[in-house]
Image 1 (tube, rainbow, N blue to C red):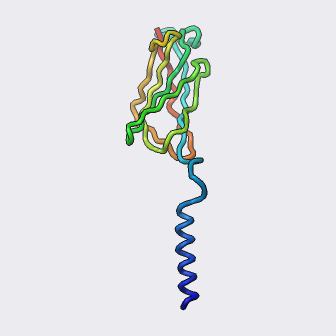
Image 2: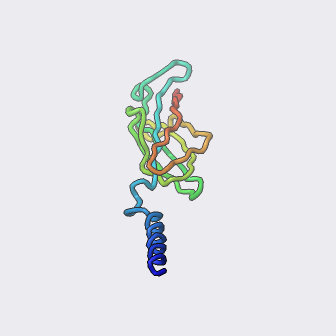
Image 3: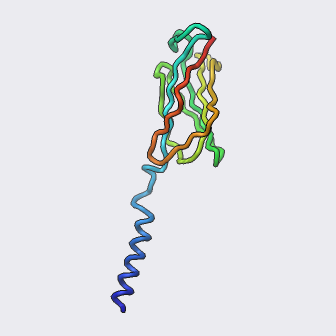
Length: 132
């Protein structure tokens, strides 16, 4: 009887330790967004960042559960970027293009909510900034 009790207790402790996992858990606690953009002159077709005078693109996301916002800045000429590591949750997102004087040139506020899952990269739809 004592042997059976010890075996059951060992199993319960093992299940408890297995549920907690190993280490701090920070390695896969969040994920990232991937953003891709291009530019076009209104009614004229594609243009480069330099040709449009755009120097920076910002990715702004808002955690819909906590209300915490996050901001990432990228060189426009990279035509894409990956956000900082974000907690797993649901987010709204916007991409904004700025010129050298930090004036807003164009923006895209995504109409949907996007999810971050642990250890994953979530692609945002690629966009075209229309500039004047």
